[in-house]
Image (tube, rainbow, N blue to C red; front, side, top):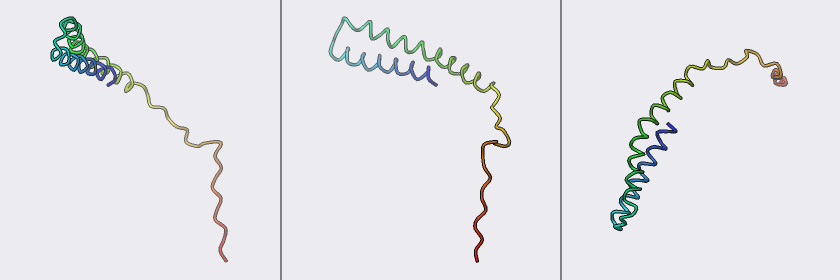
Amino acid sequence: MRYTKIALLAFGLGLLLGLIVVAAEIKSLERVVSGLMALGIVAIPIGMIADWRRAAKAARRAPRRRAKTQAGRRPRRSAPSKR
C-alpha cells in the first residue's frame, strides 16, 4: 500500500496545514493548502489502483521452487556411543 499511504499522508499534511492557516488567518497560503488537500483526495483512488495492480503482478509470478537436496550440505554426525 505504498502509493495509497503517500496519498493519505499528502491529504493529512494538507489538512493539518489548513488548520494552521485558518487559525493563524494567513490568506496567502489558503489556496496552496486547499490544493494540497485536493491533490491528496484525488491521489487516494489512483494510489489504490496502483497498489492493486502491483499486488496482482506480484501474485502472478510463479513462486520459486527450492531444490530438493542441497549439494553443499554435509549430513549430521551421529552422537558418540555411551559406555
